[in-house]
Image 1: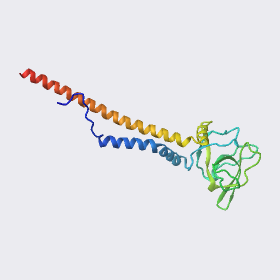
Image 2: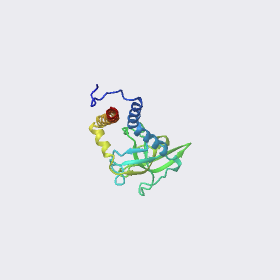
Image 3: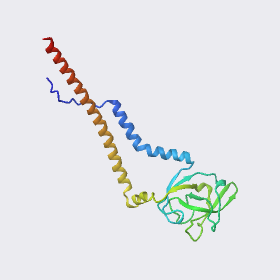
Image 4: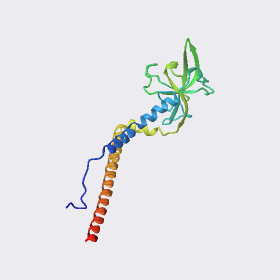
Length: 214
């Protein structure tokens, strides 16, 4: 006779393996899906940016997380240096002028003009003393700033500058996978325990029935 408390380990059902794969995929690619949806909704390749300098202080600070909306060039509002009422745009300046940063720049439009079929924007950081070296063509504009969350971007800045971003993502991913796999195994063990319990009860009933017939 088999020991009633003995658990027979069976292969995990294919259905649970599929569920585990789906859950892990969602965990890994869910953020990319959300970002893709934001790209479509905001009509821009970079709907979220983190400010990396203080050139737009005091309105925008380093570490602020900004939301960016893609806008037709003709609809971008131009202002003046004095009034500071032009739209704040995010643009790619890499290669546009010497020593331009790799990261997108967040500056205010102080003048705009159309040359042929192309719009050009004169930009300046509110905290800077002079405008940017060259006008920004419409093809370089990522979008217009429509809002933001103060200082939350410091988390990304700290992790990136300290080199901890990739290791942290690896650790979080590993913990997530282990947690999902453990839950799958736990559910399987619980199901097996329940099945064993039912079998024990059925066996006990059969034994009592046999004794009664005697």
